[in-house]
Length: 217
Image (cartoon, rainbow, N blue to C red; front, top):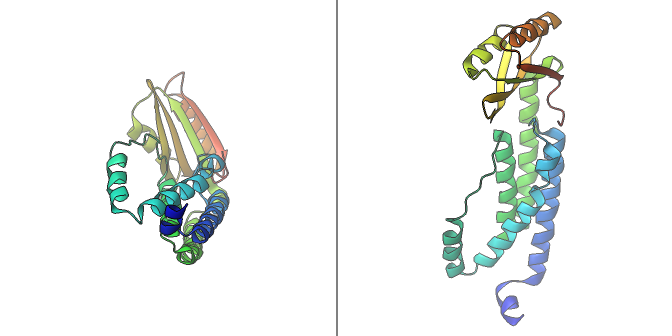
């Protein structure tokens, strides 16, 4: 305990821990409420608080020891993360979570609070500006599961009937493709035309349309 108290102030550590947990919970709520990823945001956001606290713990330990810092570099060099990031937005929030842990672990909780208080409004207004240029009431989530491996052909097929098409996710399932698009749909006739065209690709091709893909799926 004497060695611990000489390197880490227990009171400051508890304050930093509380701030990091609180900001992690705030970021979790913000991502679930205002995120635009089509993945399960509730499940993904559960990692924010543990990631922030783990980062804080590591920084708290190594900031007072050069030897531990070098040892951590060597240890992390053999770690390989295999989790797939399906949306750039997910990577943004992961970096924000790590930043909360880094700043709090560096004993600067007020800086962490101030930074998050400035960053989250910027993210919010940036999404509002984006949504104004892309009408929400016309957005649809289009999922295509097919054995046709020509991604360009499928994308061009959608662009012929929808005025906006964006590929959000692609999964390779053995000899099949599972594709998720965000599309701006104007008429029911265009949906019917796409449905008939895609269904004609093969007998095993499946297509589904879901209104407002910003909802948690």
